[in-house]
Length: 233
Image 1 (cartoon, rainbow, N blue to C red):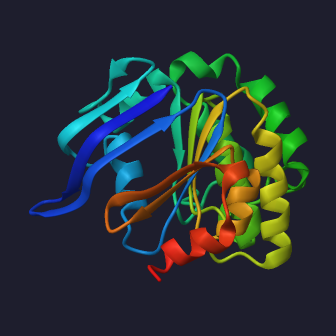
Image 2 (cartoon, rainbow, N blue to C red):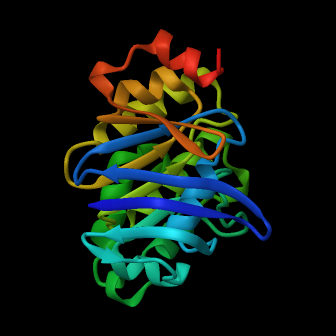
């Protein structure tokens, strides 16, 4: 599905990713974990065309997407749900969802996608006329996820969805992620809650200092060993 080979990227003269290689399998949930500064978000930004690739390649279904403008990624059915929710605060919940299906090719499917979003996130249906800026943190994260699903992406990238949320909301969020991992779509999840992330994943990558420090099937991951690598013990 997505093949990343010997990738280098960063911010101007500051390089962050050092020859990063990952293989994301179709229909699976791959989680990328690591401490702050490991390069996780930089990797996602490079995939989405938000950062230039200095070296290496990114290929989606065998087609190179290096240099593809971010606004063209929806044509390839790739959607990213960014860290921090980033909802349109002065628009209603339903208007936010409609924005997720704004590209012309998705508009005819919008009613069906709205129905799917409300079925998966019933609280959003209750709040559909409410301004997004008045939602709780958990509700705003649900809205960001539902908006991302409105374009029916084949590759869904989610950056730090549990950040700043209460434990009960985190439980609900990971139940939703487990349901999304149904083989219909490919998911890349960046998350600092290692145990929960591994629990919903099919494959795990650990990043340290801009490099891949571990690549392993989730079922084979030893959390004690993973945490030792995570904290560079």
